[in-house]
Length: 497
Image (cartoon, rainbow, N blue to C red; front, side, top):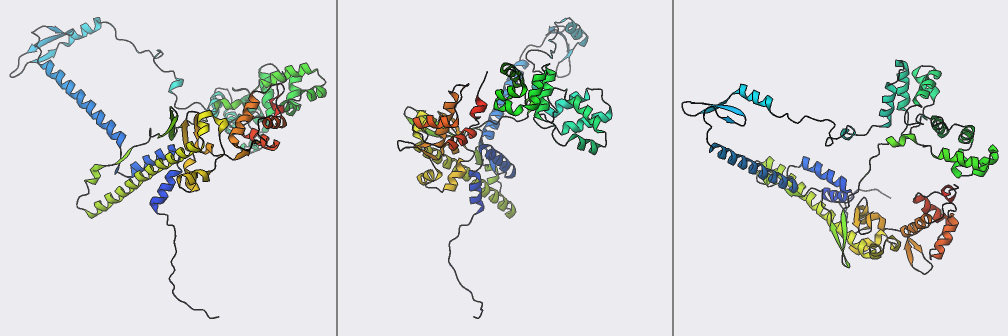
């Protein structure tokens, strides 16, 4: 078969992702905070964009300044119309002397008389640094002290030698957020620093006496022992239980501890109460994890028997095209091209943001239609819902709905939820209806909250109780949902005393 070269025409359809379409898709998946940051960066890059709110604030500020200037001008005009004090008169405690000039009379202050009157006047209010209206020193800190800073401050207050301080700072640099010194091992740290391991042990022992108590421990048992010695509870029984039976303490298997240590069960209970007061993570009080607050992208309000979906535009810049640059193109071709390019970019950004808001509103309205019983009665009435149902309802692709519901939040009469929350798999009920998995989780949490703390429900018991409510699920499904809810097993939830 011979080979030849020839030209052919082929007609096909292909989706081309224009930069504008890419921008619109990218805006859809951004969270509210990311969108505000992107708009801020775009306003720095594009001079055509203006924030309508900033312009209104600037105009208001200018009006206030103009009003203040006019008021001051009226005061000056009124002051100019007052009578001039006669020679030797006193105004506001200051002696005035009239000096005749060629055209005007200038009032000169008699400073000696003024100082005499000032020294005899009432004292000015003194500055009080510790006044009730002044903030405390802690309130002026830009950030709270970290665990490393707190420990370093204590280390520098000791009377250690420079070599010991260097070892101590190296140890502090390897203490994790929970307050443990786990890695590297002490002998490796001593070898890296070229010092004796005994010296490192002495420095570590000194650090373990710092606040918070238990910091610098190499494992949980050492952390507990440090706290036991610090509070004077280091009796033989407590020490033996910490060293040998932490696993049984976690499982609350007190009978096994009593048999092994040959002690009465009541004594084991008392020692366990002491150990339970210790903090297994002493460094967590200095955790720097700041709380993250959620701002809803959309509100669902109930007025009478009807629900209304309202977008939340608070905090987002209200963009508009600057008229100054539109009128400043001039006759230069380069300036026209630059302004027109920035103008097109600004228009596309504004349209993309508007389209994003409209899409979020559509998705929220569709969710409201499918989950009407949830908004009326609560989470127990949440129905199974998948992305395809909403996508078909609003005439969009599933990927678009997925982008819209990611990191977007809605404020409802039942609370604030992520839009993804309303999409759940279905659990079959004995009466033929399906129930959302979130509703089943809520039911499990309700059963655990209402159980007897000394006789908690096992996973099999929860399965039986759910079956009585018409929910038929397997035990492993209950265990999976319980772990997702952060609920411990029945053996760890049990309270013996």
